[in-house]
Length: 139
Image (cartoon, rainbow, N blue to C red; front, side, top):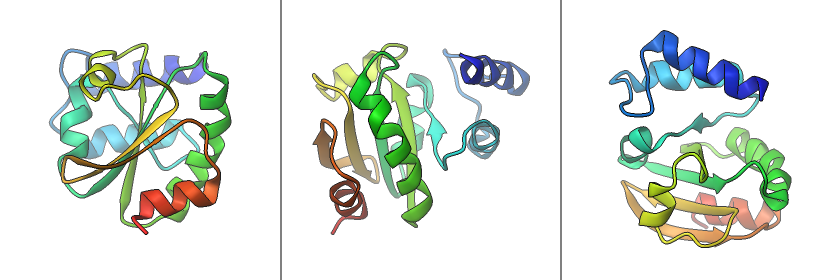
């Protein structure tokens, strides 16, 4: 709850709302990096399309009430530090349901790997670190 409060406060300071994201994505990522021990961006529905638009990205679709999602979190953080050239994002499915609906996500956790905005791979459910690393890195 403390992290959420800090994120909301940072968003207000940066002029962000759930209805529209700042044009300065670097400021958003920098603010998020100060809050989280991982190398990932907390996504909103408004920022989602811009985040996945270029390069290789992986998004963790999760919810705070989901035990497997909580088990995946430390693995996701480790991978965000270990895998170069991939941007990592997390999207709370309860707070932003339009994106999971668009991608027909019916179970969480779900990790989707995007290449220039196009889904190239998907992992549903809790998987081991080495399997996730292989999928995210594209091996």
